[in-house]
Image (cartoon, rainbow, N blue to C red; front, side):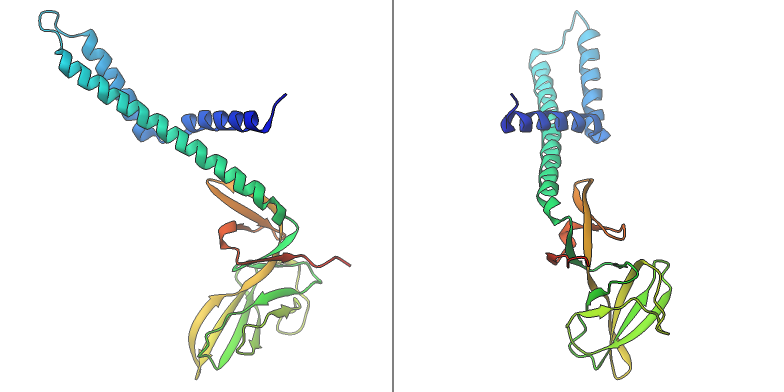
Length: 226
């Protein structure tokens, strides 16, 4: 019967093998070259003037150090991968929840997108610029100088409902007509999947966007669907 400890050990062994297969070529290449040179030196040494034993022992010690360094790097890489998988498993509970992050939000055609602006405190005018997935501006909305969340209803400048898709919200903070700060607003977006990309845990949102889990600043339950 396989228990949690043996399963974890098997996972680490598998990851170590994968790390060996995908290790950076620099150190591994130097290791292989060193081994070939040492073997050739021992094979073709002059029988009348054999290699000095002290020098040979020193080279063997260097060989051992290089081998241990390669193995140590493989183990560290395997441990890093295992830690990443553990983090991804822990964050699987985020699936179905809404994450707050500075990224485009998804408009499904009916439900509003909750935007969390953070304008400059010195501003006397705040404007939210809405752009679609192609970067085309579709709406420009005046907001109060406040960090209060704003629900965007998915309409353009003329009040027409836009097509479902990803939309970005840029907050322009101005004073006396001069723009002080332009910043991408945070939105609440639904998490549909967690993935490992390299050593990072990535969240896939309802609109298909990929965001780093480390950039999430808030998390809440998604509203019940009606």
